[in-house]
Length: 258
Length: 176
Image (cartoon, rainbow over all chains, first blue to last red; front, top):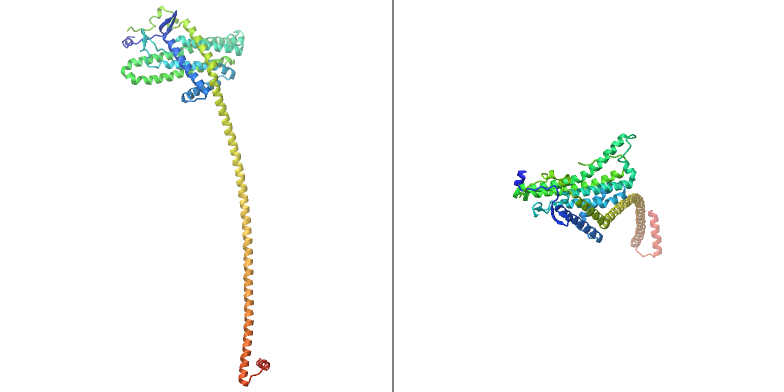
């Protein structure tokens, strides 16, 4: 702590308030979240309009290539084409928004551009409010589709079974309930942990490397860009896997990555 | 500048507050994200999905066309092979026929040349025979004249051609 203090390092787990609108406090993560979402919207709308008008360039080709790859993944993971099509907007939006939000933490000025002592740049993915929101949306969506495909009782049957008739099944059901909560929590904490740790890593490297940071930091920034893509992809894939598992009632168990 | 972590203040706050979780913010972010998903899903993704479908359809079409072209090429190759085989057989037939015809033509020409040469030889022999007969006749006549002249000299008087001729004939008969 003392060493960090000497380096003038501030670490805040929660997002910090920059200003207030009425009673609502606008935090640095929220601000960056809005910017990241706007970038995602601009990129996607620009690509869609270009495709609609038949104007192609390298950027449009790149976004289209990524979109096509993700769409293939959706269709591969979710066998039901109808469900895959329904899940596409959520999964795609999660991927693009998470990726662009994560990448904002790599912008120069992290922890140095401040308003009233509060850093402006803080990725929304490094705010538990955002990651928890995404996890809640995912869990609820998965439950909605599970009810649609299995019915209310069918879905309840995944969790609650008669312990007298099927004691192992009842135990499995209890584990399934715990699994649902842990999956949601893991989704939120995984993304938050990676993004938050990534930001701290960049700040610490910047402080420790001092003037050499000009040379050292770009390598870590590239690494963080890569991690951002990976985290967005992992979240995207997990959303699809959870959905696929929920609608496929056959007693399969998920193999969630660490 | 004062340095701190929120862990130090966590003792006086709830877990959620320590982690920076604000329920108002959480609900706002959920609603905002759902609106974003709805807008993008309604107005943006359909175009991109359509373009992907079109591209895949084009790829499938191209793949189908390529497969058809390959089949056509294979068929053409088989046809070409068949045609070549036929052409080779035909060429072999033509060659054999040509050989036979040329051999026949050669034999015919040889025969013709032989006949022609025999004819030439026969003609030459006839000519020689004629020449011989003619020479003999000329010699006979000359002999007659010479004999006549000689007789005239011997007899000392000219005899008429009738007497002369009879004399010569007699002389010749005697000589014979």
